[in-house]
Length: 242
Image (cartoon, rainbow, N blue to C red; front, side, top):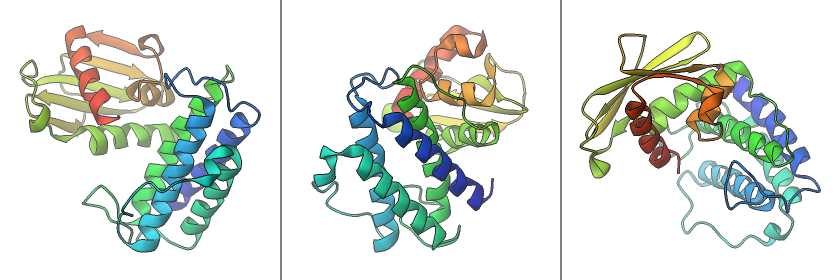
């Protein structure tokens, strides 16, 4: 997806998130146990503030976070931070330098992608607090599956080595794209394709993305193969997305 498409999704999903939160800030968020809508909205506002500062300063702000006076009124704060984030994106392009936690990509383009997915998933959270949610755009959700697998999950896991993982493979399919995840003791490796695997997860892009983020129950996707491999994948996903 292109930079402007990510920005457009931040704009649209952010507006839907704020609308869902209005007059509902005290409600529990079923997909985020222990959180109220107030907590959810304040969290996303703070995330936006952090990305604005990373770009303004050229390095991660420290100390972080500051005290937020606006936390008393999270929805107006969210709307203001959302507008300022969009302004930052409008004044930048995909190559504008910014400090990020992903060393290979130190650009505003990284944040446009990351904030599009952050906003979409939390928009669903806010809507679930009102009992009804709409799916994430299929193209955005497909890209979100790629992001969570390649940016969040893939890489060195030697600090959390798991002896039960010895090269098991699980295929993740969302729409027309498929990824194969290999679970090794001290690493996770991701490749595209549909080679032979020990287990598989398939479904519509929005359902697969939300399942990977722990927002959808197992029944919303199709799981097949070795259920122990599914369990091992979930243990990695919980750590990768916390």
